[in-house]
Image 1: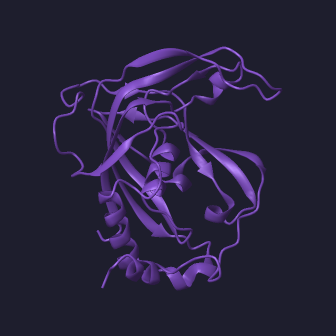
Image 2 (image 1 turned 90 degrees about the vertical axis):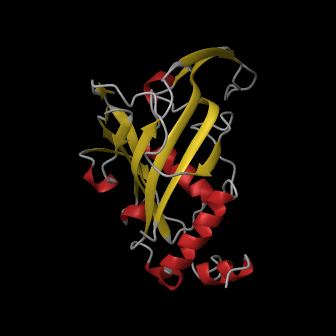
Length: 237
């Protein structure tokens, strides 16, 4: 596929925060990355408002293990407080995704050039991404590289039992991707099989809850460079 991307992402720590644990100021990571976190990594590799990343599948390459740390986060009222954050430790994932044109952006129809977006995305991936890569939170720095999804030995390859991971956040519905002036959160109940988790598309998630009203940011030729112009500026022919 000319719109597909396959990559591996790895780092010393990850924090895919379960929002239920944030109420008391503590943070506890989910056992696996959320769809939204992986989408954010894809957008850090290469993103423009013309396209939308769809995460198809993730493969957990290393054992799921956690480590708690005492931290001193800044309080909104000023000063610092004490809290325990529980991180995932020594993580490594393979990700398969693809991009589609955002049809809720008719103002960006001039930038719908699949081949150019694909070529720029592959170049950006080989360079380690166009923006900083992190796993859930800024302090969890990570690295990305191209890979063949499913290659290599994974820790859970020989596990016969399925891992039911409970109810998790899938991601957010933003106004510029849905056409609705509302921010929504999606929930789902993932199952990991032999280290693989297949994600439903955002519109297939059955549990959706509104958060607040929101309007999309406006883009046009004055503040977006076309993929073709960007491709040539990067030395493409």
